[in-house]
Image (cartoon, rainbow, N blue to C red; front, side, top):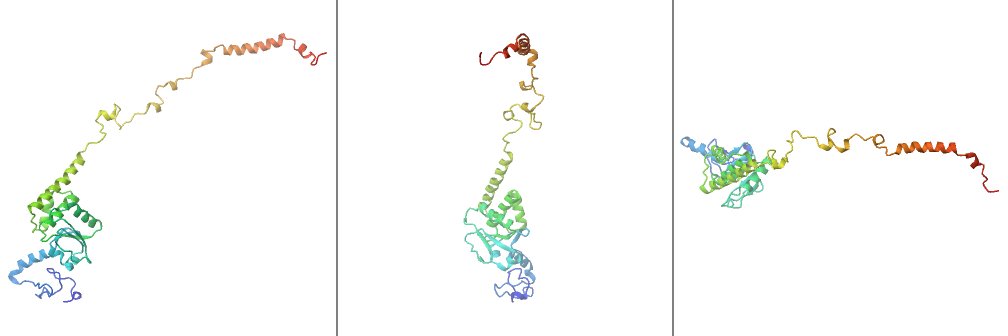
Length: 274
């Protein structure tokens, strides 16, 4: 059946065929089971879709989910985080891929950096491994611990409720425990770090009052006693040193000299001789 004849693909295989009418898919051979197989059909349909961990952003699934390009597009997924180096990135022209390179130790920081960029760009992302049970759920749990501030137990419960098939291996769970300790131990150390200049330490206060009520500096205090603020001394009144009397005597001498000297005789003296 042509794609334009249906608005949505099959909810199980992602291809376009009349699955409600029991038509077998011409691409993968999928068909809707009948009667007694309804319970199996419902579980198959749930596992065919990636699990939505955070609404309209973070999806968790398997390599089978990652191989269904049309199904991912219907959910708006545009980026894929591949946690298994052995898994091929099938649709590089349709999706933006980021692949972890170590198949033993999970690179949590590398994966979280990619997921944070997806969140900033508001891009929906699928995190997958081969079965969607251990490696990819661990990456999602690490992201929840780092971005939400949740402990491992809360992150595990959140993911498990939305994808019941999650089964972490002992090695992967141990790596999550170590990453949890790394995150929250560094956070607690930053919170409990003492201040560099606490007001209660006398060695930093030098005996001065608390900074909430700062004192006015002495050199700016107009009421402070300083040798610059003394009233000016009246030197002529207390220490005359004879200066005032000398000036008075000088004027008297001039007057006396003028009264006792015959000035006219001086003016009458001839200037050039006889």
